[in-house]
Image 1 (cartoon, rainbow over the protein chains, first blue to last red):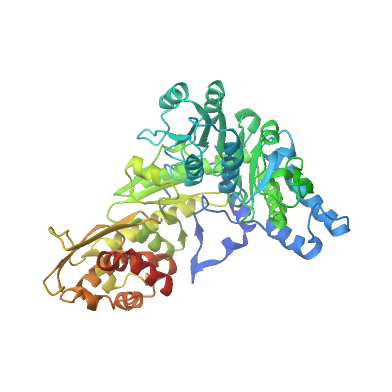
Image 2 (image 1 turned 120 degrees about the vertical axis):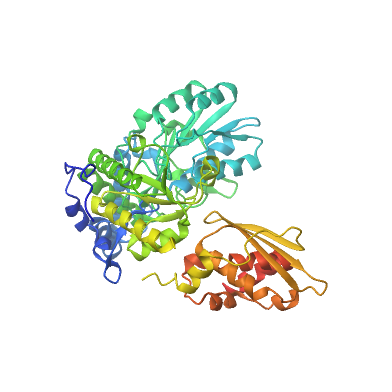
Length: 421
Length: 133
């Protein structure tokens, strides 16, 4: 396949081939004789050696329950676990490690806020303002809460180009009793990057808090919760080189201190009596039971890896790839890419190919070694609102290359040949 | 290389038989395959002996689903409602003649789900699904 001279990135942001060596899964064949082209990073990312080694080392050398033991193994496990927490706090510029709650992922973080802050502070008639482009995890918890309490969920509409209607956003804030804005920083389908800093400022001016779904942002760009002034921010460790079952909920300390806990049990208490109990300090108030110790330690090592590479470089690499991909996709007859152009897009491209159902397309691409995803990607309202069918989604990360984008294009032509008879 | 897309599957999938909604219809059901956004609509016409005399499918589905719908339509034409009740999940796999990967099983079974629900109701389909999968 000839490289497209007009679009191939000239300068190397970092040496991708060197990075790829750190990921053992990328060295194996997908099918016999067919190398793996992994373009499903929005779903989950692959893991580098240092994360794998950290998981193995923990279980081999110092596995013990945290926080409750005085023996050496417990001390060591606790230190590594809390060290990971400090790393995560630094990763997003939180004021304190006490503002970092370990979760299983973004979905759990958002549900936690809905079930604690939402239950305690939302009153009849209040509005939670989500958006039409949200992942189901930032829609359904609010709908479930609305079924319990007499609140309403409203949605910031999308414009046809896949960006949010910010005039409508301002109007809803002005006209309705919005108490929480729940918005994604980067759409997992369209890649739309929302202006969170501005939206937060407007929300606060209107007396509302803002919860940010950073699942597709945290892995791909520098995050600063102080600059964003986010009240709550949730993301998934497994989408940023961390193990599955790892995630973070950030909350401003004053907020977290004022809300009741979610799950009750060991570790989140201070004193338990038969006639009542008191809660532990932050962040433990929200971490009941034995945590996913190995996973969070592994996530800490993922942060090390990303920080060493540099989040600005990672952002630039992703941007260059999606820019190239959009250029190449534009040349494929019958192919439609959804959402904004490369300038306003994260490292995600959702598209459809005339006459070929997304499932069939993804099946053919799989035969060519290419891993992408078909469907509505947990964003049914987004697909309904824009009137688009199930889409095929390619999502890029630090180890993806220009050659892999070329392989995707070749695969698309293979599918066209098979299904055009 | 594309083990799923045999001549048999592509034949039925790309030129599905019995396509087009029947009006009027004696039995009907429409559903969607929520995981991937597909929808499938079935209309049937029956005679006085509860024999299926016409089948009409419509919808937006993948090649596997369309192939299964087409083959199932051919299978049930001329059969009574009672005879059709014996068609089970394994029959669909046999009909398709391929090893359906786990992720495509919902695609392959969608037409049977729609047919079973149209004739016997959702509970019958639910039991079939729970037992077999």
